[in-house]
Image (cartoon, rainbow, N blue to C red; front, side, top):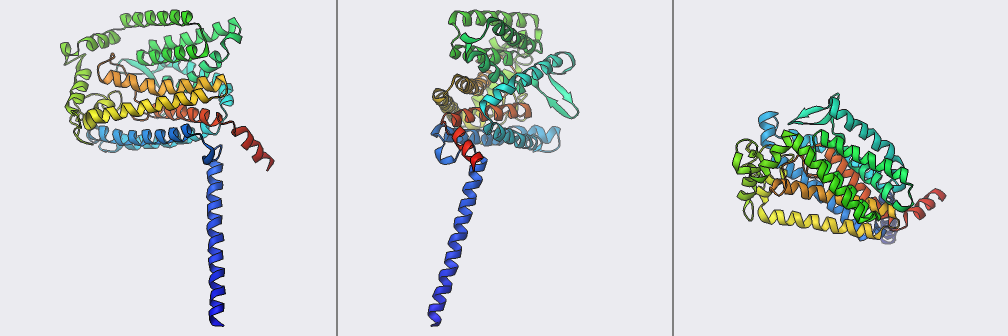
Length: 411
């Protein structure tokens, strides 16, 4: 009799445990469903790979930044983790923005983009008048203790505005086309005036690629490209700062103590990395030999520490990211999201390739950050915003978002 009562009690306890564990599982699944626009199980494989790639990229960025900046931070700031802490602090709003964009319809972003685009347009205009000049360029606005770089923050809205224009290029009236193209041209000229040749070039390439994918005639695009090239040449001839950059790029060893110093030190860092690298944290060039080792030349430190093997893996990573971006664009259900996806992929991978080209001497020395890796809150927030848009395009390509949101409202 006692044994049977014990059995009954044991069955009741085990039943309670099972119901409790099932309730926990249900709560977990409900929490995951509430975080993401659609359940994880029905995410396309491109979206699953993309979110993992963004996570790996951002974590890798924190590690590389910590390694490249600790020496200069300890010498100049008295705290080896100064830049690392600030980057982690900027990562929090970046992830929050990524989540917000992920849960926002692309059409809503396209509607809001025009207002925000022209706000940043005005701020870029202000940088040419009242901006802070650092190393010969006026790219920053000071708002209290906050430094804003409008030319970085405008990048997601460049993609959205270009998509708004080129998604139905043949159906848009000529006067609207003219106004938008003039505004894009003025924006590039304002960025050139700072001077910021790298961002102006990247902006021009972005518009050109989105225009090509949007169905603009190749002859028109070639004429725009020629005009942009001539404008860039005029800017270089009129700016001694940019002219020195070009001459030092052609032969950095000619003036290796002055105009060619950055590139020479960058090449020495990359060359000393060898095949397998010096090892994580063991770079010599970051000991204040290479200027801007945690921003514009962070790839050189990465190459020195991880060698040819690490560089090859990183380039492979960018190739996979580009392929996934292309897959997402091909699966999109309308021209707007298709062009947004193309723009996001072009900007993140294109900027990365341009940064690597500068560090390796394949392109004139310009100040262009490596997305998710270089130090800077403005660049990091813009990168998270763009990655969030790309992921949202992938989720919208499934066609389930509208159905699931309707069911949620009905329930």
